[in-house]
Length: 228
Image 1 (cartoon, rainbow, N blue to C red):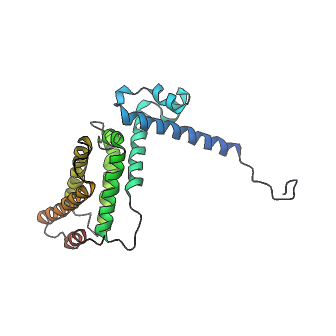
Image 2: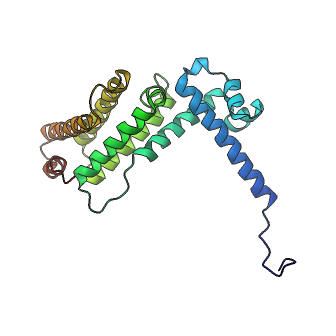
């Protein structure tokens, strides 16, 4: 099929496809506005109308896509976790040692949260407070980081002592980051990175104390060695 000038015809965009694209854009506008509002104020202080006004969207569409304010709140938490994950997951680097890749991840983590302080303290490091569904979102995100670390350092994540100590290390990182952000970044970022590396090394040694069958000497050596 050709058009009047003899060239090939442009493919027709199906109405259903256009409607879906518009729906996706509307949903994302609502989600972006929700992340913004919940980053700045507590859940109870944010009204559904605040979100829809910021998104320039009819209020009924929030309930259409998310059912209620709690629905969009949980979706905003999920979006927040994805944003941090995307910002802090290092790109594969063939010439970077495992120790340097881990440092790169922690450096990106601290940089992103430092640049988005309110967002970090309320949505990310708040961890959902006493809300079990919200906490589960961040537990999953935290566990993905633990899994990435185990794959990077060739650690056996099936060992209970390893899971215990790596979760403890992740919790310590959260608490240290909260203090760092709430006190106007009192320590140099690179110093914080090295402290986190030391925390991980200590956690691995503790895992071996709990379970002598744990083989983590290679991981400790990889973390201690730096090529950058």
